[in-house]
Length: 306
Image (cartoon, rainbow, N blue to C red; front, side, top):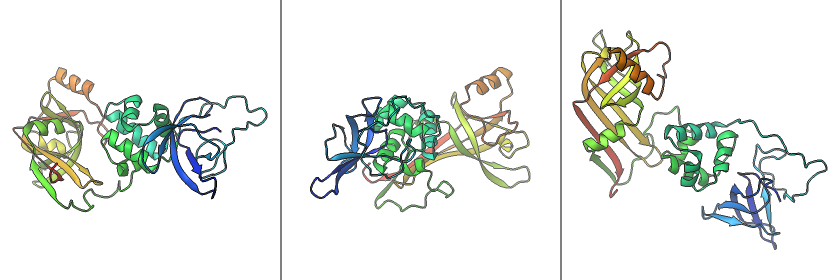
């Protein structure tokens, strides 16, 4: 019997031939894919070390060499003639889930080992998920989402073109104000925020910008003739939020304060060197704008009692 990470181990009833139990193979103990295996059982979501008996067989998943998705043919471990030559390592070809996993893990500064430990899977299986077009079970996806502080829906990319907040409201929601310390902590995670300005023609506008928090100031890059540049020399509102669609909860933070352009050359160089991301809008955006909040407020929606 030989298996790859992500394959299913199926235990059948010897009397009826029906599936008695199945689980996802999330850890290998031998490079050649022979038992034993770490298996996450579909009925309990628990991971156990398994030495398969005669009532077990491996069901390969799509993307593994020489297999087809959903194949229920038992892998007997019999090698064909000449198969002793090791197959070349697969070139990374991640699917959408793999790309989202890798991006989310790096964004949070986590190693594969730490992420795998949190999700209770092997680092090798996480590497396989990130590098190949894998289709993990719902249980594994939920564990990974929990380890990364996101949702399974987000990792699958479902609903990316829909505005957030279309799910059902909580049965007993609790809306509470956030302390200034909580607001600073949530705001300090760099990402995308929204700035509210009055444009030169007198119309209000709210636009998203990639931002950083450096030395208690919110900073972002833009172009001199852009809408966000209209913030310079005025008092503006800057908002960030997070919505968890699966749990119907989330938070928002609002910062209000004066915005000024950063002109000192050393300060500009320091901001550019410490920036985590480039502006998504692209193009020449070398004008740094700094907002120093004079008022910081926020609110969080959670189930009552949390």
